[in-house]
Length: 194
Image (cartoon, rainbow, N blue to C red; front, side):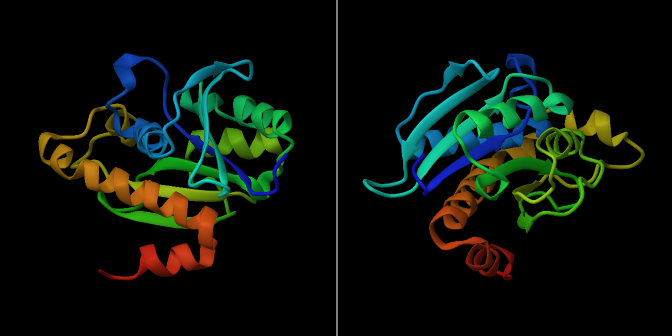
C-alpha cells in the first residue's frame, strides 16, 4: 500500500433515520471530504461504505469509511479495513461527535481513552490500541437534564443547522491538515483562538 495512505473513519449509525443526528456528524464530515476528492461511497466487504481518492494528483490517498454497523459496533469494520489496506493505527483518523467539546468547535487528539464514547471504545478493543488520531467534532452537552444518549440521537436544532455547514468544513479541513502537515501543525491551527 502507498505509504501516504490514510483510513479516515466517520462514525455514526446506519440508515436514513439517523443521518441528521448529532451522533452522525462524523459521517457528515466524510460526505464533505468525499465531495472534495470527487469520490463516491461503495459497499465494501468489510461491512462499510468506502470512498477512495487523492487530495491532489500525487498527494495523500484517503480511504473514507462509514462503518455499516451501529456506532457501538464500529470496531470490527474499522479493524477489517486496516487489515484489508495493510495499514496500522498510525494511519487511522476517526471523526466522531464529542459531548465534551462545545458545539461548532473541532478538537484534535492522538491516542488516549474513549471518554465514554462507545464507538471509540469498540474501535480501541477491536484494533488493540488507542493510538490513533481523533477529529473530535463538538456537539456540546445536552440542555437541562436531558440524557446524553438521547441528545446525540436527535437531529441538530434549527439554530445549529445554520452553523453546521461551517462546522463540517472545519472538521474536513482539520482531517486534511493532519494528512498533509501532521497532527501538531493541525492542532496549532485548529486549537488557536480565532
